[in-house]
Length: 337
Image 1 (cartoon, rainbow, N blue to C red):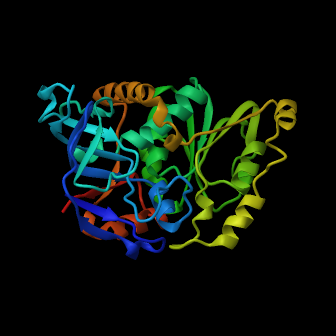
Image 2 (spheres, rainbow, N blue to C red):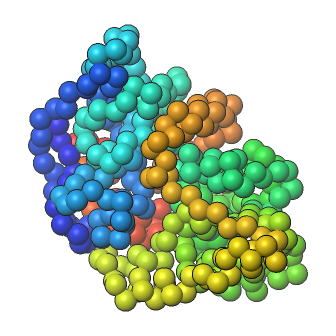
């Protein structure tokens, strides 16, 4: 098999494509011949040394794949061989073959190709957890989505519109026309003062924020009583192609630690929650349940995974640059070559 390795922390040029022995499935496992692998911002942070959950160097990142089962381990029905699936993986996804627990290899419905299948697991499970499990959005709620053009942003939009809520997105001006056409009710330039842009409008019921630092402080001010801020990343720490320790320290200092304490939240009738799908591996059956519901919505045309680019393994650095420079509208997918 072929894998994309990170041998050391650094710029996108550090990737190395290496050959390795094909993995063999153990009891209760299946092997997937990977046709497409999703790229996520956590992968970028792992490459730069900003992701504390990353394995020790050298390592292979990747949380999601789609392909076909070509081997099964003991205790798994052999009829699964040849089945088109998508799967979440605990790293290792940038591989042309990968072994996962049988439960985590979810059948793809007819018509869902591997590229779009690989664009679903991480971003839609994240959006589902934020909106359905934590945010509990209802028709008429006002929801602000930061980084609206990213994979999670567009996944969140699908679920927001499904529930009949009002969607506000932040993004660079070049993405505004597409985001409005896609379904956002209002789009704001992410570089403008958000409070000024939303002045004289009702307060927000829910904010999805992967930025961190000052953005969380501003978000707390924009919530109306009963509103919730959900933090699901710290992208403001990624200021370049390599790690900037001083920028990280400044961002940590800008986190509204005092405003997030229980007494302040109680007095303001607001909530702060956090989501990190990388810490949900012990909840496998639960996540699989969410993904099955998401696939049912895909079959109804309510979930529409958006793919920005398909990039070969040999040019994995280009895939990371697209995300790091915030050029993507939707998911970036790696293809084994």
